[in-house]
Figure: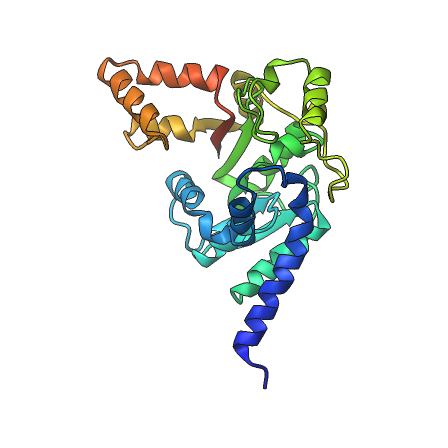
Length: 286
């Protein structure tokens, strides 16, 4: 009879071997070892996003959830462990295998579909909620992807998405200040000069900065509304409820001062427009 501990260790080794080739293009990161550990154990670091999903769509247990662009499966597995009926959808076949391995680590049977977001292989109005974390910037046609999310959600369902600010001061992918305020050809020259290009990485379809989809906030909101969504900024919602807490002590002090004079909301909206790296939106199907 096989030793269960040996089997678990073997599965962990297999998962690690499957993940590592997809991390080497980020070896320049100063925190690479810590970042790698978080990728290997992604499902353990999803508390904040699970809380956002609960706040937007209600209790996770029993929820029919589509995780679009599931990546390495951390959120999909965490949601399944929380009781959701999760379907993962991922464009990269190697990532699909990683999702399966991660689910097996927890003895989960998690359906994984290898498909593009522009052509979801699901009937209309079948999911209670959907997530697309760090996905929209990489797809071929953001409008079509958002339209597909609207199609597969039940009326009143919620799609939680992230999108990159075209004016982001620190670029979320290359971690370089001011990059998005430069013409794209110049920005890509600087990326290459800093040794942060993804050329030669394991990705077959990895897009250059000039090919990715970044958005102005009003532009993205307008697009979502035309597709039949009511748009909620999840961070602004937390701000209004007094639950938004900055990770940096200095920023927390500034927010308290702004709140005291009634300017916190205005300051947040200005930051969202001109500085913040990522928008986090709850799209409610109307």
